Each structure stands twice: as C-alpha cells, then as structure tokens.
Image (cartoon, rainbow over all chains, first blue to last red; front, side, top):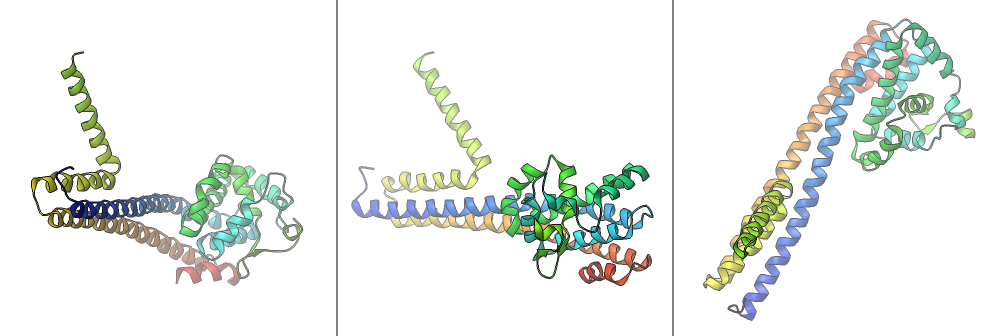
Length: 186
Length: 114
C-alpha cells in the first residue's frame, strides 16, 4: 500500500464502502427470498394435504352438518389474507386450559368422539385440515410468516391441541373478530 | 512438522475456507475478491479509477443478477401455490354444488374459486 498516493487511497476506501454495502444488501435480500421460497414450499405441501382431507370430510355422511360448516369456515378464514393474521393472533393466545377451547354451539368433544368411533381416518382428516390450515395461515402471507417459526415451535408438536384450537375458533370473517358466547367472555 | 509443512497446511485451510465461503455466502466471498483486485492492480500502475470501477461494476452486475434470480424463484413458487389453490377451490366449489350444500355453505368457497 506504500506505493499508492492519497487520491488512490480515497478512491479505494470509497470503493470498499460501496462493495460492502452492496454485499450487505445482496446478502439480506437473498436470505429473505430463500426463506420466503422455503415457506411457500411448505405452503404448497400443506395445501396438497389440506384440500383432499377437507373434501373427504365434506363427502362423509358421518360428519355432522354444523361441523362441516365449521370446517369450511375455518378453511375460508385461513385462505384469506385479511383474516388469517387475526385468526393466528386469536388462536395462539389460547392456553390449554382456556375457556375458549370449549367452543360454543358446537360440542367439539362430542364431534371428536363420534368421529373416532366412526373411523380413525376421519379424525385424522380433521387433524390434517386444522393443522395444515394453521400452516397455511402462518406461512402463506409475508405478514404472518415472520412470527411463524416461533409459533409453530409451540403449536407444532401438540397437534391435537392445535386441531382443537383451530376448530374452537368461531370466527367472524367480516369483522376479523371472534363471535359471541365463551369467546367474548374469555 | 517443519516450517514448510505448516505453510502447506495453512494454505490448505485458507483455500478450504474460501471454497466453503463461496458455497455458503458467495456474495461475501466475491466482495472480498472484488476488494482484493484493486489492491493488487493499483500498485501495478493500473489507473486506480479503472481498477476500482471495473471491480465495482462486475460486482454490482453479480449482485443484481443474484437478487433477480432469487426473486424469480420466489415468484415461481408463488405461482405454484396459486395454481394449487385455484385447483383446490374449484374442486371444492364443484363438490359443494354437486352435494347440494345449503347456500351459506357454498358462498365462501365458490366466491374464492371465482
């Protein structure tokens, strides 16, 4: 470096700053894109399981009409960009002992025991619909994807609880808030 | 170990580190190369403006290309997800109409499918 003059040094310092900033920008942008790509890959996989499971439940005679409606409502909420983040906030604030898990007009315990007696495959389909629904709501949109990993770490392994949480959330889609009864009180 | 062995070992470690960096974080490794190029060229009496400008433009082109490729890959994935969603909603809408579900059942899924 002793061969170069003051002017060359200034040019070089400016150049190093520009290259460092470019490197930082490229690194951050590429990493964000990579993460988003991974999220979308998971969403695609979740959707491939979600739709057939939902169709199977809707076709089944063993599933009651109110429960079918709840499943369809859940599906609509998680697929909608406006409602999904509110649903996630609402659902993930529940604790295992939460009153809201009791549900309202729909008796989830009864529905689950009826389904397990009829066929364990149907009960599995309910779990698939709820847990893939949760994955879709979390990862489909960048708004929720940020906190998705932290939430999934808590919810993921307890997928029975996740199923219950998702199905217990009777959600007003137009106003982005839960509907009456135990939901308002809790 | 004699001194030359240490040098060979050190050289290998450096080469391995550079190779790993190129795989893991190509933009950072290439930034180092871009910075080193003018350091070597300026003392060799190459015009400093030419040496820095060429390196900077080459690196900028690489950065823009990398970002463009990553964004394109994300767009492709988004299109794939949208396609799965559209197919799924269509199948769901057909099922709801076929099975003659009440209107309030059909509304949301049919609306999304459209």
